[in-house]
Image (cartoon, rainbow, N blue to C red; front, top):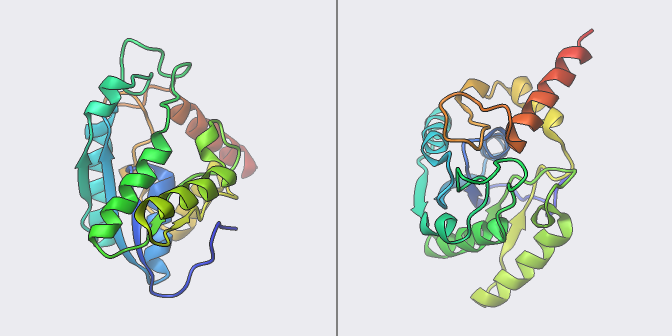
Length: 211
């Protein structure tokens, strides 16, 4: 199911966004007995404040303390629909090197904490080039070389899609009402961004699946 098998009692930096996927990943890894270091990255995304609130609430639910890293200038320098309200939030959703940046920062934070494992909540059916198994392997190799140490990048949900993560979240009692799945800065889900459409489609499928 996952890239990299897990051993009992690992120390893991989890890239936590407050969304369903990263929250489920964090929940399941903690349930397995691993020591979790949640890392929230403010890269200048429109939804950063509501994502941060969701991340804090979910970490509180799990008995964890998240760390917020501020690189908000990145989103201003490399604009996309998820960082610039003037751009189309769906058509311009790709933010170049976002996941590579996340993993690099996760590894740097892990270095300070003496942690060499980073977990990212990438799913199956990738939309962008930085969401594939090949990308994860290449990033692990490059970051390991950059640090001069063996770094493990885990993508434990990479064989699942949004329907699967919602099923698992409900099965294990993860409070979905605490999660945030919208890229816009509006308080309510916009219904137009990729994240909203993906979650709405998954929820509709699961609703019909019951009948």
